[in-house]
Length: 132
Image (cartoon, rainbow, N blue to C red; front, side):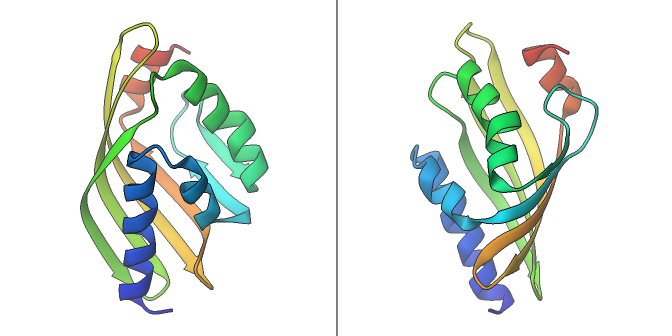
């Protein structure tokens, strides 16, 4: 697939996530995806495989959020099998804290699936909202 097709995959993935369709988001990830969340937050680390990412990041994060995260994609830049997404997430925790973060995510795709992700975000905000 080319850069334009890869951009559309990422655009659709986040549009569906913002509608609350987590399955479409997860369906875009390869089963053996490598997902790296930068920093030293409680959610930071390198996760090998979709299942590990769900268990160690998505499930604990989702348990604390009221209704998930609405993602606003501001920019997509693609070259070859890589797509960079700049965006903003908007959410509220079940305890009422606002969690609006800014993201840059670097994706590597192959055969229509996300194989690798590196996510950059405001880690100070993650710790302020979710603790250590």
